[in-house]
Image 1: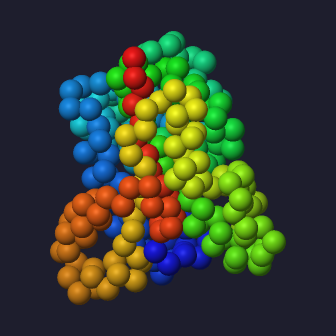
Image 2: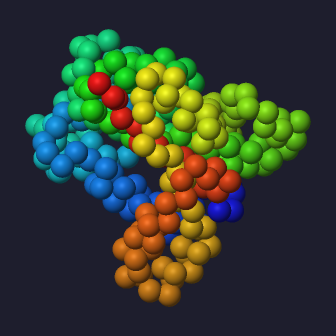
Image 3: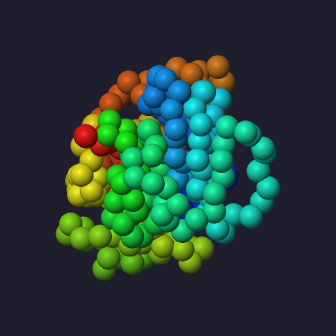
Length: 243
């Protein structure tokens, strides 16, 4: 997928149709991934996105850990318990069935190893985690925009990338994401790009027929390019706690 300018990464701008497609892919992937039976799901997406509501509507009880930087009111849902916390010390061991860490949660959390160790602790045996991170493709595109050519060599070390707004993101290769999950004792089910269809392809298809969104989403999810980190601005992985 072609690199996306940093100013377009907030889901607006000229790539609005692509982000509509992107959010539809996330929603369908989450729907397919969630437990079949009612479960306790921990949402670590920081209050970004709409995923806790989707999980609740699917019949699960949700514990949503909110980002302290987000203070806006949110719709009330008795199936969603919202907590503001810096870590998961408020949860006992083996207390949740699934963990959702969407919205680049483990890239925004620079100490991802510590955060994932907490995730493994609170998961019950057999529980799963769904994790989304920024990819090396995204990190290199942002560095190129900033003309930081000396930082573009990838040598296996952690890549921390300054964003135009002053924040820092941690970018991963598929191998590094696997190491993150396996390092806390989780068994990796799969790692893949969140999307492989380019913004230009999505824009062209949707412009031809606005009803083709569902077809595009199915096409994306059936591609299954596991462990390919040469495309896509984000990587997503599923991992299981083996008990």
